[in-house]
Image 1 (tube, helix red, strand yellow):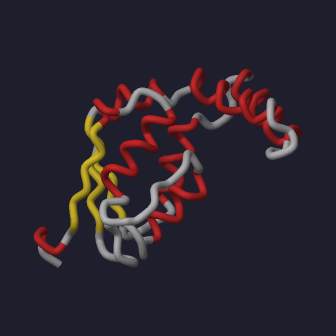
Image 2 (cartoon, one colour):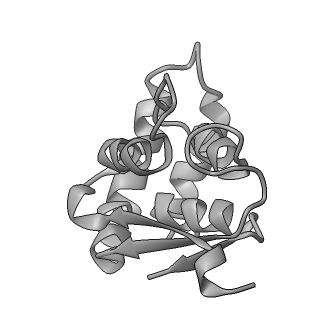
Image 3 (cartoon, helix red, strand yellow):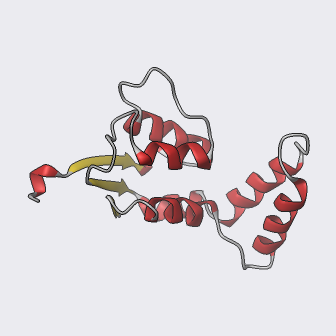
Length: 133
């Protein structure tokens, strides 16, 4: 497969400063042409990487270039992830509070995954997508 056969998508990390702006950028880049946008959901991010709506078509090869990645690792690091789980604890009718509390405690002990770690894990589950940072 030639380099020309690989679709390149570019996430502009300069537009990302937290979890919500990450999803704004995902919508700008990956949801072009779709008649809806993704909400801030890890499941939705995973779904869009599977393709079928937005710009990814099935298992086509994708080079996902992420500009300013190192800054975004901090933007969606421990502090942002702690805030993410604390927000979930404030909505026990929607989210499992025991799960959120466990994840929060893991992070506070320095053992848990950051939001960025989770995003990277999701991207890694898609063998057709090559992340370039």
